[in-house]
Length: 317
Image (cartoon, rainbow, N blue to C red):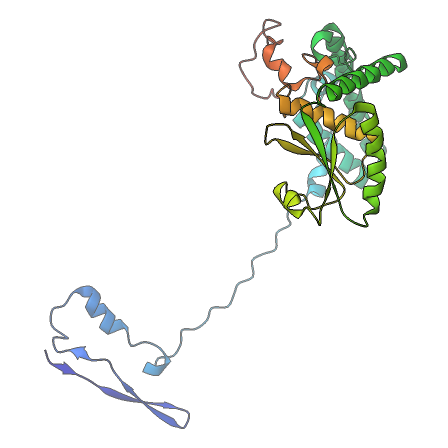
């Protein structure tokens, strides 16, 4: 293969530059693929090949358009085309959108008519909410077995006293039964003032239930703290005999009622009497509205009570 080269001379200010073209194949000019021919024919473009740059087109300013804002749209909102019955049966999403539009219109243009329309639709919204509250109260009272929690969590004073008494009795029995196969590790550190206060509270706990509470010095018995990943004092950890189960009961100073309630919940969890979903549910509340998973064992209340809605489309206002 034979090659040939060409040298062109260009001026850049006062400095002369010699540009050596790349080697061109000797068969240049013969029949070659169109893409290769176009490359060599169109590659010499630009300022260094004595070609002026293409003129830059000036940006044309587009005519300014007035955007449609919420303020412009709020002027067109009106109740003139809606009857009271239409507003009463309107889909909540559409009703809320109309209400918001009338509110903004009344605030931006506080005329007597605009304010009257907004107060009118607000009154319909209040009455609609009251109607739902009354209907919900009716269904709740009629199906008290499903939705009324007063049977297990009464709010009246005598009922609240009875509920607290039942909770305390259940907590005390559970803790007393677990003292033979459970124990508490009490992680402390020298000079920890909080640990001293917690130790005084634990003394009442031991006198009441007869539990084993073993103090663990974080400095002298660091291997035990490392085993249970304890880094804060004071910390109470529940352990179970002949098992590797453990769970923190309290971190920091905890009162006696807090210790009792947390112990009760963790003991029942370790025994398998409860799950994470019903961790705080008491035994006497099982099967009630305060037992989350109990609904899975109840026949669906909405079956057989009326026609089935097969369509989920929103009715037109």
